[in-house]
Image (tube, rainbow over all chains, first blue to last red; front, side):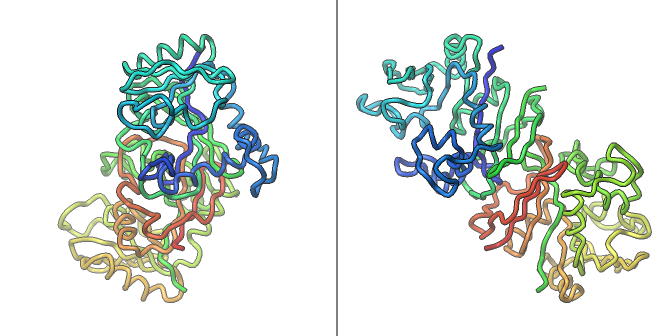
Length: 220
Length: 220
């Protein structure tokens, strides 16, 4: 059955999913990239984004962390992204020149539903990615994404505000959180004011990776 | 050099150090005992509290989790506790009959400084534990504890509110947090509104135990 799930969602030890003061230069906020060091060191992410070398070597790590990255991409038929995950433009679109952070062939290869208050025509990219802009709410985006995904899962890409909306609405079937051993101190806190226990979630898996601790949460 | 540190401080995955609605029957709050399952399963805690059997067997686990428990007790010359860690009595002491949660021979065996707004004579127990009640603030308690501890460390026993006060004051040298794979959803959050990064802390150690993930945070 198709599930709504996130995957490889990086958190700091103190619970932040992004740093403060996000901008074009710092899309993950101040110090926010530290959350993702574990992912940048994996073979799958290095290949996907053409990252060369680094301390983990050209090929990247192939252990537990990489296994979670691979699992995150498996059986995904559609994505949902918050608008800030699509780009740094705020408010009405001044024009249609912004085409995402990922160049002409984004790593999705399936339909991607972008939440926004400002409609815009669908945008077809190379490699099978089509960005659809959904202006009538998170439930509409989920309905459209489920239809596009068929039996496959819908992956909730983030960011923090988007995941929080779907969590509060009780719509997320499974979460995979990757906790990095860093402290941000400020930024976007994933769970503040959200009672996951009352929403029916429990931790079903905890595994130590090479550079992050992995937790899977699912509804009982 | 003598350090102020906590150890084996259990947190839920969502950051709570105690559940809501603490009472005599539920000193750790609703569902709060779930935070401590990892500790109850260790050999050291089972011996200390005379716990028999349980799923881990009579002897308890002797691996990573137990190693952190042992380390927590090593080289401790004095403890500091918040009053609610000493007992469930609130406000002025109605009499002196409450002598702690731990019976006539508490597991401290050194001087213990209890923070309170209500002075009370020192209380000498069997086995070397003496409870001193400190009514003139956290810095006074630390000064007295350091004097009692000499070259050994002062261990900050908790609870959450006490640790938060010492953290905000920049007085904690090292923290060992044990994250249990449970969600509390509500209760006493350890870090809400505290910017550990700005206070100079970083994660210096992360190790997966049998039943909890262990993090050591220290000031850079």
